[in-house]
Amino acid sequence: MTDELATPPKDSRRGIQSVEIGFQLINALAAARGKLPLKTLAERAGMSPSKAHLYLVSFLRLGIVAQDRVTSRYGLGPAALQLGISAINQMDVIDVAREHLPGLLEQIDTSVSLAVWGNRGPTIVFRLDSELPLPLSVRVGYVLPLMTTGTGRTFMAHLPEREWASIAAVEENTRPGLLKAARADLDHIREVGIAITQNQTHAGFFGAASPIFDSDNTICAAATAMGLSHTANLGESGPIAQAVRATAALISRDLGARHS
Image (cartoon, rainbow, N blue to C red; front, side, top):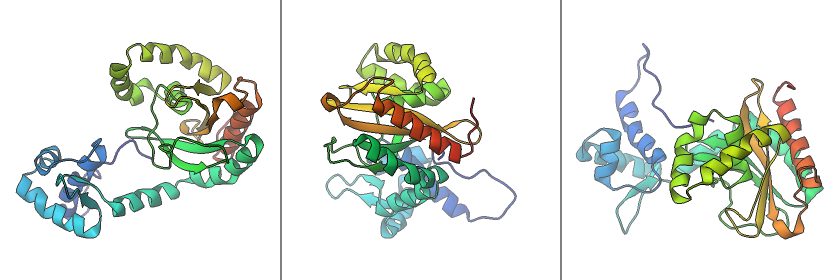
């Protein structure tokens, strides 16, 4: 999964220029953290509002873009969501994870998920629920906080800092001192192969995440167990941590990762 949507690089092949121009609007919406007014959207796409409006009319008809009836602001529509889900579903790591995560769920009886790195941070792309409750916000498509979740810290530990620095800076502005604390934990996370957080993003809940590596031994996803803190043994050598690490290792093995 790429970190951001991007206009295909220019080459010598013939294409339809208007499609490439119109995609700049989609790219701008994908990068935005909320719906945008026409003027702002046009500016970010590098075109005039009148020109942007013509493209948006077509995108609205196709469902790629949706317009808020109250504010008239634009956001990605249901067709864009379906395209994104379809692209995600074609990723090999999800196919492999679907084979192993049900076994993890049976072992530990907490909800389990798979997250990949997206342009806004760690994003849940697959989830299996136990009978125990989870925060309603934690669903497929949810972008997890970077520094207050086990999943986020797992990506921090295994990605180059340039990949996550800007996201960490935003969170640091909200909670000064958080970045220093997270950085101090990264070496340990790499050493033990698990990142565990409690009561950080959601009071009373924990997350325990382990990295999944591809054939280049590069992190491509994270397997995470999520559940109620007071019912769980959250030691780094406890049953939950062991099961999550083992499952992540199995998925990595099937993706062709080499043992270090």
